[in-house]
Image 1: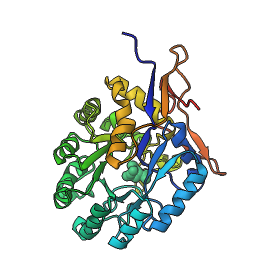
Image 2: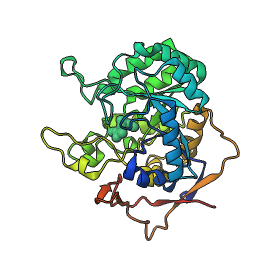
Image 3: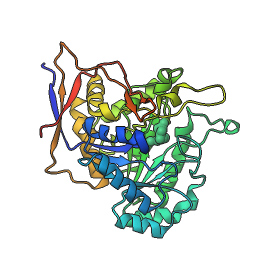
Image 4: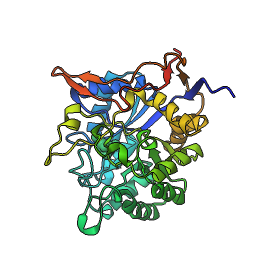
Length: 356
Ligand code: NCD
Ligand code: ZN
């Protein structure tokens, strides 16, 4: 049977992306579109984090100036200073969600939360005004309690169940799931709960990041059986599962200059290659026909975005003999900064074609 040579995705959307600030942002923000994506759901973990509607809107305007054709959907960072009144204001201003980071588990999460019940009033206001709760689903490591990066997600799932039970109509996204247990938990919760999945977690297992800083992100990639569960749920086309790349650029020096007392920055950069990378990966586990659902329609439906009459973005197989360009790194700023892209030096075999 001839293999598929082209797929057109209705206005692809990435429901979890880090676009940073300053010189880094100037380079990575336009890459969303280069990677074939029209809609970016933007994470709020800047320094300082985005905890007011005004800050989210000024950041949105700045991103828009860097990439005028991309649609940026904004989030707030769950924080003690956020009140139900701020939630109403955010909803009225078109902000879509609130991201919760448990304290200290990942990049810029020092202001993260410790006890979800402290936020029940805020969650109630979100449920009422239709804002989505985006959960970074890991508990902080705690050697006394036997918790480390390998079981931090599974241990978190009790919080997902509890919040969902208390707020059954609140739309919740368990972000960047990495385990079979998370997939089952999300299915069990039903249609108000969904799950974003990254391309790198469809590709990596523990062995790929242990000793390789450019494959290190939070949550870390887990066991082969976990990766298989993520691939299987994508291949099934399940509507509660969709693309959130968690593309998280870091200066390459902060990935490689770790020392015994200074760790490696967590985050994998995929924005500029996103749709071709996904086509490559989904084809590798027989799910190419699910690309449109995964990279557009499932997430759009969950978030209540348009699903009809959308402009298509084509991802096309590159002619066999050249296989396309090698994935490359990018410079930023005036001091020779670099950001290294996932799969640097490989060929993806697919490219984005915009018919406009
Ligand atoms: C993200 C970042 O660098 O902002 N890092 C990561 O490893 N995923 C933060 C996050 O989403 O956890
Ligand atoms: Zn993230």
